Length: 237
Image 1 (cartoon, one colour):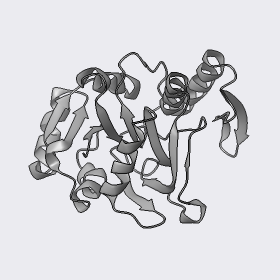
Image 2: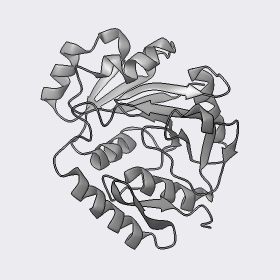
Image 3: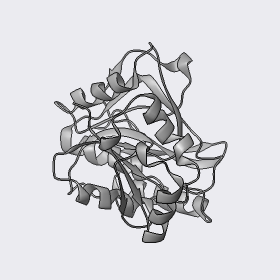
C-alpha cells in the first residue's frame, strides 16, 4: 500500500507545483495521500491561492524551521505510521534500471519490515547506480525517504538533520537501507525559499560540531571543496 506523503515547504508556493508536486502528479500518485506542511496561516493562504487544489489533500500549518517542522510532522502522525517525506524542490527521481515512481516507493515500504529508514542516492548520476541495497550506516538523504514514524527519535540539529536521523534509526534498528538504483535531483541551490536563508554556512558548521560531539564514532570530519563537512562511518556498529 502506498504511504502518506509529507512535504515540509517554506516560501515556495510559486514553485512547488512545478517541482515535487509535478513529480507526484506525473507518477499518478493519489492526491488524497499528499499533505503539505507550512510554517504559518499566512503561508497556508498563499499556498491555497497558488497551488492547484487537485495536487494535494491538505495543507497543514506547522512551525518554522526544518528541525522543528520534522518534529511537528512526526507528532502529527500516529506512532508506527509509514511516511514518505519529500522536500519541496525535487525536480526528478531517476532509477537504473528503469522503475516506476510508485514501484520505487513500494520498495521503500517493503523495507519497513526490517528497518525503520529507507532512502536513495543523493544525486541523479545514473553511472553510479546499481540494483543493490546497503544496510550499513549511510547518509539517508532528507530530500526523499521512507520511514516508520517514531516520535522518540528526535532531531537536535537543523542543517545536518538527515545525518542525525540516519544515526538515530541505525541505533534503533541496527541498520538503515539505502537503495543504490535510484537517485534524486533537486533544485535546492537554485531556488528561493527552503534552505536558502541567511547564515546557512554558520548553521552547517554548528551542525557538524553537534554531530561529532553527540555521536562519537559515527561520523568523520572531512574537507571538501566548499569547506569542512562530515561523512558517516559505514563500519559503525
